[in-house]
Image (cartoon, rainbow over all chains, first blue to last red; front, side, top):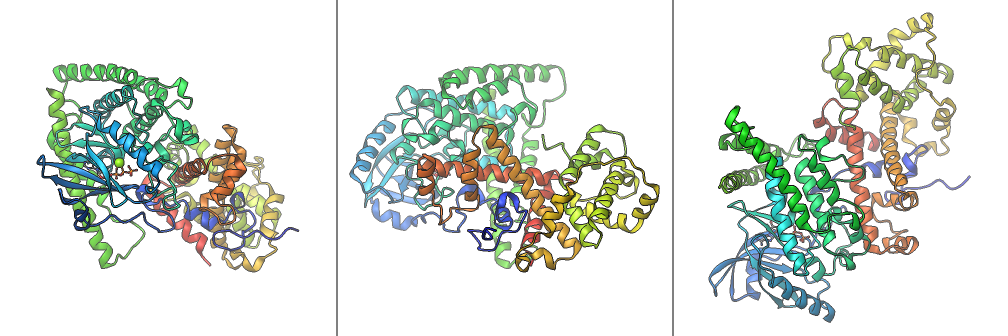
Length: 393
Length: 240
Ligand SMILES: Nc1ncnc2c1ncn2[C@@H]1O[C@H](COP(=O)(O)OP(=O)(O)OP(=O)(O)O)[C@@H](O)[C@H]1O
Ligand SMILES: [Mg+2]
């Protein structure tokens, strides 16, 4: 008889009848979510962002106001430029991998292309460069939320989704025409400002940093970026992707906006998960074709298809408004919106369940989350109100 | 579609003759017979009796007379089964045996296989089951069965895409990067880039988590219970 197998992770012998011969305990442990994909399973966290005061020492020309957010490759600060006097976002990248001369050259080349992009739905790059072996990008500051934050506050209605997606298509179509592929379309990189305007951030940064070649920053995939939005061909060969990879990623985001889930494995068409125009299935599935040749070849085509459906939806809502009772709660009434967003935030604010008796520390953490959620609610409400205003114009 | 399969359907259907509910219940029985069998065996019944008993229990279950009893709060399928089988052993088994409904087998229990799994314990000192009560044994086998189900589905998905080998090579990575098979080694072995391996593993893990939750969702009364049940099962597996 062969030696009794032992779990490579925990070292205990594997019981007969174990699922696929794997240690059941470790397997189930792997089933727990690592929160928001920004922490690795082994507890190592990504590089810690510098404090605003420390960053300030590198940028005498800027007033560093606050840390706006953190990603896998660096941190983003809200800053005030003195000349010209304006608020901007400073993306300060972590120093890994930036030492090589090839990197410097690529960064330079790509950043120049990005700075040349000017589009109402693309975050404008003002400036870029390097200090103390770290690359930075100075860009338009978007005072609002990322699509990810919006997801956390509540689900989007199909109507809202259909208003947003064509703007994303426009941004992509424009950039593609300029020869720039985004390569990292995901909810974190889609920003919505207070007036409800959609802005795509981080165009081409992935290429600049040669991702996912440097996904190894900390040795854990979960830390840097998420591959969940990547096209199959991009995963296989990240160096040679074209605009159709962005279209696939947009398809993933689209699906998530509609259903709240990712199109993983054998996924259902959106119309089987929620009530929507079944023609949308075709659009989403066309964007999510595994074979790039079978996908939409241009973001502009996708935009046209989405807008056709949006048109029908608008007409239907208008005729309903004229004849029948008020349209569904999601569409307009601000009061309903407030109540609903608050309910959503209450869900966000729920403390993690396992700790039955929570310590003082975790309780105050719960409160912190509640406050943060409150802020998001207010924001969401403002944002959506603005959104509806814009639309009704 | 998992959302409407299984336990919640059975509960909401009640006694009304709804074919979906009957299907769902049968499917549940077919999947989770082994923990029951193990339970009955550990209660001291012979393999032959245990098989009979489990069959009779399922027949009784599928008649769904129990659904008439006033108890809207049936909770999870797992705990329901355990309570029901012990009641069945206490009250119904004798009746059933004298009646001998002879309705044939409800589901096929592979008894030999089941016995194999129960008795083949070369390292019994390290197998926690040997020190368990019948109830604990049931829960422990339940957790294993559920995981087996999930891994089976995951494997089939890969197989359908013609990626069985990839799945077999990468499934240990679900638990994390192993020191004996680092991603770099796997990459060379599979002729992929290290980046591609990482991405595939990441997706594998996401899909696994999703399927795990789907499977659990099929055994609880409401979606809100999924995470709690997941934690409960983890506690069951780490019980020593
Ligand atoms: N131009 C901007 N204006 C305002 N806030 C921004 C801007 N760009 C980024 N942010 C905020 O900073 C956060 C971190 O952004 P960053 O791009 O570093 O990480 P990410 O997009 O989450 O992940 P990745 O590093 O993979 O791109 C964002 O989630 C967002 O909240
Ligand atoms: Mg970003």
